[in-house]
Length: 187
Image (cartoon, rainbow, N blue to C red; front, side, top):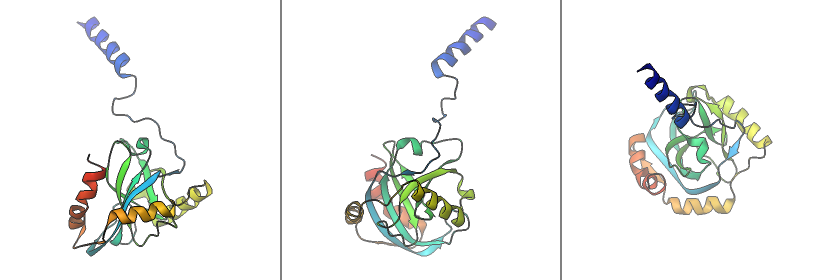
């Protein structure tokens, strides 16, 4: 019995490799710009909520919901800190993602998408990202050559995003974003 169990373990290691099945490949820690933008729609909430993507940030009462393309390796589920998605000096909240690299994200505040880059910064947990660390990461990204998306792409994304969303709270916002999630993340 002992030989059979040892043989089974050897076969399992050969088939699965030495890393756990759920382990994603190692990450690059340099800034990585998103590849494109599909849709953008502004939103305003009557009841703001605490920003889950950045500790110490102001409450979110307005912002943008955007759909962007990114390298799928950056958004693979991990059992560790993951690359943080930024828009300007704000961490963005990922609402949903597809295996192809499309993401529906919320960007708090009044962000000019034609003026600020959207990129993934180094891996971190949300409770470690602060407004000052986000500002420093923006400087690093600009120094690495990360630039805003082309104005024509942003304007086309705004046209596809439709009219601004007015919602009571975060829950209603998510319900109103469901068509975007279905079109870009869930198909």
